[in-house]
Length: 471
Image (tube, rainbow, N blue to C red; front, side, top):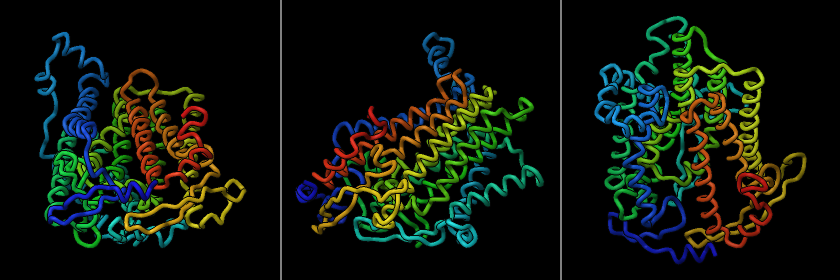
């Protein structure tokens, strides 16, 4: 079944005119009308969605409905709202340029030293997964180091140097949004041009024949400048995710400035999201083998998304708490903390179990027992037959994507910390549910094509995707 879909795959032509075999890797080869409509919708409206959320907090105290009501009833118009929106400023441009330059410097010019003294941490020069063209890229894994240095400098300034106020990010939040958009569009456009004119690896490019799809989803698999600067790893991890915890710290500082104290809900958001961020950087080498690096091409979806969507919408809880400080009761705070920690435990242990199973080829113990697996085979695009195993023990026997379930539990905890006064801080759990469900279905579609009847045996052994007994 898998080999049939690969052999029957159509042919396409690259810009140099050579026919290419279209295997089942990466983004789509051909674009149906629904995919094209979705792409155009996101290209047109995603920037406005981000603006709407940030504007709602700035002008309407985080209410998502009041701007719509005001416009519908004539109490306000779009021109009035836009006139009240802070423009880009020279200060914001300087701050953002300095920020991105610092992260480029830490990524490109400072070899990792954390792996030399942190037990269990894997950093330094590491290999990624083999690409469809047979390329094995090497990476300088130093995200944890960049995060530590950046935050050391932040606290050094806050408590000793006083070069700038810790509220500087919040105070320039909307002007910085315009800077982030400029970078997001610039890097996405450059990646598109690079993919056509001077790709890092011609064989790892995909051309659908549709400009909008190519621009959004990307042409190049691993665009690089020089030997080490990898666009995908840099923009996935830096500058957005390093900034995530700094943004939250700036929001906490603003809450302290405005109200004289930091609420326990703000502390919860800072702590739980910092755990998630640190987990990302601690396991950055493992991340090289995930769907983001091994499947996605680099286009607007990642370039703009990592510059704008991630830092501006993933931090809505902290922003909301600046405008609406929430002091949770002790039982509620403890319950939310436990939900977040249990979710993180499931997320991390599920990923650890799969990684352990793969590294040892099943010669390990999961939950104190020898793991069970479904033996399967598949045929790669070059016609070679391969054998693999699908784990059905531990969390992977509970549901096929139980790591996503843990991720969603943590996401819900961030939102619950904000109370029930407004819908805005709950955008994150709504978005993550849609994103991870779509990723789950996309991954399973690819696996069904790859493994055929063996995948049917696996889904019979583990019948649920995310929630046992429900879905």
